[in-house]
Length: 384
Image (tube, rainbow, N blue to C red; front, side, top):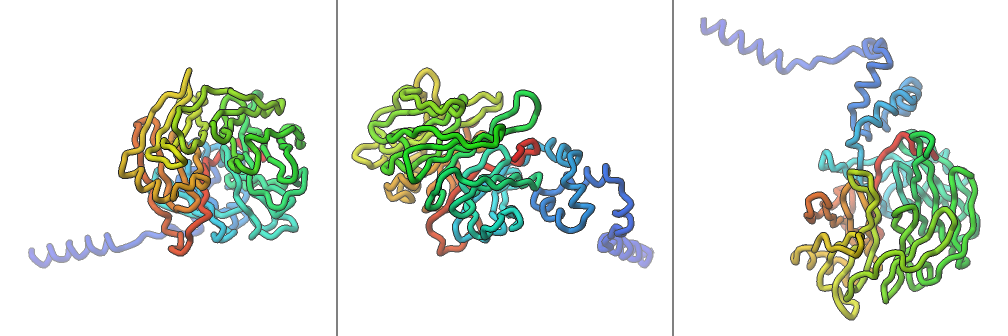
């Protein structure tokens, strides 16, 4: 009896250690519909890596049926990190659902035309589209999910495009998205707006208090059909209508008093309604003592204040040089970033809580500046 029991245990161990490998011929006989459902459960990084492995996967993973299936998964939302010293082949992204870091491949060199892929500089992101500066004379719009991209020649000479705002616009007739690009001209006071519907640039007069050299923060916050900017002190809000190119002063109530710096953030709530937020450092003489967050209603209503210990860390990171501070909206989060620090401070609007996003493990210790963050939400219907 003892020998029989030991034999059964030995058999159980062999069963656990035995690895069942599916024969390649069985994979080849699977119908596309079943294979699509299996692959759709894989991480986005793995799906993108599978595309170039064979012709069947290339066609299957770019088909409308598979992309529609992938679009049904609402958990695809990432924070994308850009740095000048990263490889031009991929960028790291943070997956909140998995609480981990991955990398995503950038558009292949064949999409860059005569320009070098190493000249790609990520400028803006919106609804699954990424906007890159491609050398000095072009922009590149890419959808990494559909593997589609387009090169747009710039309408005017620029020493090196360093600022542009990409805005996604849903179509009224179907589920696809168009887009517009707000591009301030470095050689004049004018601005250009590209419309994907007309495939053309339109020139409009600029607004010196917003686009002047003393106010380099040219990335606007999209809200209610317009881009919103702030002027230098005394702070005020200015709107730019993307449809007719008109500038409007005083489009929002005056910001609260005693602010050392301000940033605007546009975002959508769960009800898909637009919201406009204001991030401000409270203090005097250019020194912030605290950091608060307001939401635009009839007036600016305070919705959050950074705890003291977290505020000390953030202010020490900035060294009271607030020109390095950038803000963005990401799926219910107001993110506050600093180009000289590899971590992200974010406010969870639904819970009213503050958190730090940990440092990316792909970063090298000697990298000290040039960190830029973007919200990346893959979207099947974002057309280039």
